[in-house]
Structures are given as structure tokens and as C-alpha cells.
Amino acid sequence: MNDNFSPALPDRAPTILDRSHHPISRRDIDPDALKVLYRLHGHGFIAYLVGGAVRDLMLGRRPADFDVGTDAHPNQIKRLFRNAFLIGRRFRLAHIRFQGGKIIEVSTFRRRPDEEELEAERAEERAEAEAERAREEGAEPEAGGSAAGETAKAGAADGTSEEAPEGTSGAAAGEAQRGSRHRRSPIPIPGRPPLKPIAFGTAQEDAFRRDITINALFYDIATYSVIDYVEGLEDLRHGLIRIIGDPEESYIEDPVRIWRVIRHASRLNFSIEEGTMRAIAPRLPLMAASSGSRLFEELNKDLKSGAARPFFELARRHSLLPVILGRIGGLYERSDEMFGRLAEYLSAVDAVYGRGGAPGPQIVYSLLLWPWAKTALADAQGDKPKILYQAFREAKPAVLIPKGVLLEAVQTLVIVEHMIESLATGRMRWSLKKRAHYAGASKICALLVQGSFGQEDDPFERIYGARFGAWRPPEKRRRRRRRPHAGRPY
Image (spheres, rainbow, N blue to C red):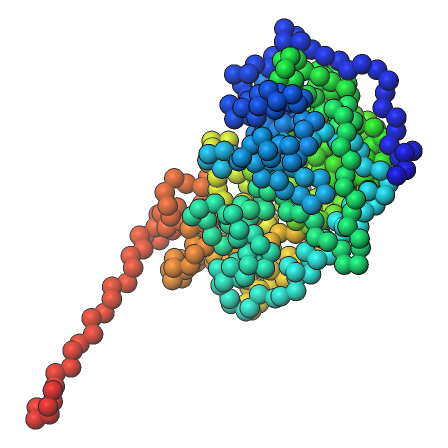
């Protein structure tokens, strides 16, 4: 191990706020997270609420997740909780499952990786990224084929069909699984010996291996105090997003930290500290080599956050969109008109999530691509779903949208284009109502035409009827029964 890789930790005591000097109350902590914290503490282990939950509670916000940090090792955690499942191949996390699909993630304190471990992790992620892209891009969709069939194949190929929520199928199941907190273990690299076990660490070492200062705060269930090793409380007071340690080294170690810096700055309306911001542009190309599925998980987080528009606006200012969406992102970065339309659609999606709704991946990804797809479809001749699918792949996005999710969006967009055209001509192929993607397309068309998704199940039919009269399904013609010929037996 190269002991010179990680800088020496500061030789100073942490800042500790006792119960009377911070706003966190146990009433605001998830009851199941409290059970986990108390059981760990009751068996003699350190038990901290960690990460974003502490940050959000300090800001008076409701955390999305409640994660726990401890000095208990994974097997010790598993022995304490019969509902605990260990995931990961090197650094094992404990997922403690409760009713309703809730997961409390418990991780053992660990230190920053040394050079050998870091290079091994990079090599493994590169191999995983190459395997993912080969798997996703290896098979072309059949001309005119249904998205449902391709979705089922994609789910079987990448294993996303396992542990999908009950009642979910196809691309939605794959997206739900990929976007969940069940991170897949890295694939082994042929010919490479197994990686050595990762070294655990102290609470202080764990704080310094995290990404940004405001995400490295701890809440100690034993004393009800907030512990800060990295001056995160100061940055929280001043509304600053700051990388822990040297920003350039941090981005090299994990380029996806750039994404998280922009995410937290946009969601919290914080400023990005000068050094943290200055290091973004030179390290952006490194993100393109990251795992495409991992980037897809990050994109899902932002699209479902209720704050997708501010994230995309800040990502555009920092030239992140061409990395995320390839040439499509480049168009969104250069064209104010095209990005303006995208921003309006993202605002509508944010409003739905803000009300506790969920428009679904079919609608969300269709809207994400529509400003680009509108022009691409106008120029397409032939099998439009296949043409649009191939055009997206050829744009070389770093985000690897699963085949099933992309095909659902493509099929939906083709129906949307026909709906928009029918509102100008009065000619509508009502046989499209039988398509699985019609309902989503109807909602999207309503948003494009009237600025809202509409409350009814089929807002497009209402809009069309207001212009051209109500549509009625054609009556089935009764077949005349032939009378038997006289003299012939029945």
C-alpha cells in the first residue's frame, strides 16, 4: 500500500454541536432508522446517522433516505439484524429491509483507497462499462418490432427483472431496479486476481473519504450531537458546496463527484466553492469513461427529484450536458430555444413529483428527448422507431439508458409526432389507441399543446374532439348469415 497516497488527516478535534445547539430532533428521523441506530448502540457499536440525512435535517428539510454509519463490520451487522442483506463484492454494505420496501443502508466506516485499490477499482469500472455497452448495443431492434418484446429481452439480458416491484413489468421494471438502492456488484475482470479486501477505518477517516463537506456530517445517537470533521457546518452556514481535499484529485478518483457537486448546488441553491468549480472543466472528459449504468442511476435521481429543471440549468452552464447526452446534449447546450422547451417540460415533471405523483419513465424520458426527437422524426423516412433508436445510440451519450426504457420512449415519441400532425390535419390513426404507449403519448401531447398533462385518462382525444368533433369507434359490421341452398344437406 502506498501510504503517501492519502494526505494525513488534520490533527485537530472535530467540531461537536450538542443537543441544545442544533435543530435535529429524533421525531424527524425515520422510526426504522432509529431502531437500527439504537440496536447498534445497544450492542456496544458506534452508530451515526450519516450523509445527506444529517445535512437535510440541519436545513429543516425532509431527507429522502436515512443512512447509518458504524464501526460494526458487515457480518456483525448481519448477525444483529435478521432482515439484513449484504451487497457488494469488495466493500460490503448491509441493506436492512422493512415493510413497504423501505431500506436502511448501513455501512462500516472506511478510509480512502490507496493507489493500488484505486487503480483496481478504475480498471474494474472500465471493464464493466465496456461490457455494459457491448450488451446494450450488440442487438439492433427489429424493424417495426414492439417495445414490449424488446423490453422483456433487455430485462432478461441484464438481470433487471429480478426483485422488481410487484405489478411492474418490462422497461418500467428494469428502470425501477436500476434506479433503486440495490447497486449491482462489479463484474470480475478475466485473468485478474481477486481484489484484496477493502480496509475499514475510523469515523474521522470515513468523513474524509466522502465527496463534499456538507455530506460528511454525523449525528451520534449516543449523545444526540452533530459531529463535523471537515468544516461542513461552516459551509452549510455559508451556502457553499466544497469538495473535501484537493478537487482535481477527488475528480480523478471519482469523476461522478462532478455530477454530485452540480446536483447539490442546484437543489439547495448553494454556490460552488471557487476551487471546486475551477476543477470541473478539465476533468469532465473523465466522466465519459464511467459506468454508463451508474450514470443512468444518477440521471434517474435528478429526473425524479422534483428539481430536475434547476439541475439541468446548472449542468448546462458547466458543460455537463454534452457528456451526459452526447451530441444531443451538445444541441441542448448550444440552442437556447431547444433548451428552453426542455426546461418547460422538466418543470412539468418536477410539479408532478412535487405533488407526490410519478409520471413514469416512459413519459419522463420521452420529454427529455422530445426537443431533439421532434426534428429527427421530421427528417426520418421509413421505420421511424428504429431510426430514432439508432440516432440516439449514435449520439454517443455517456449515460447508458437501458434498451427497454429507450424503446418505450422511442415508440411513445413516434405516436406523439402523429398526434401533433393530426391536430393540424384532422386525420388521426385511431388504431394507435390499441398501442401500449398511447396513454403516455396522450399525456405528453396534452403538455405540448396546452401546457399541462391534463386530468383525464386520454386528454388528446378531448383536445382533438374540441377541434374536429368527438371521435367514435366505428361500428362493427354484422356478417350476413348465408342461408343453406335448397336441396343441399345442412
